[in-house]
Length: 129
Image: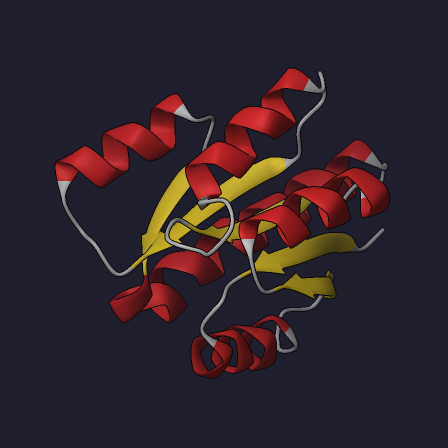
């Protein structure tokens, strides 16, 4: 199986970098990109991704609000929050909203790669591969 990923990011330059990065990870696929929180919520409900890479600061709804709405649905996807802010208040808010990880944008390649690879491996084990 392939780990299906939704990217929720309003900065197109950063989104392009993340998209290229995901394309290099065997067993992972970017299924959609949302440019704001409302779009992220709608796509998450419609597409049921395995993982959402969620920017915290987005227009219409921030990533924390999206995560809280997804938790109300019962079976939310795994959420890794992305942020340019690297302080304890943001990390705590992301954790409280249901985030499984907090990744700083300035170091996303080094931080995100092992997290996604771990999910890909776990998914393979769950499928018996």
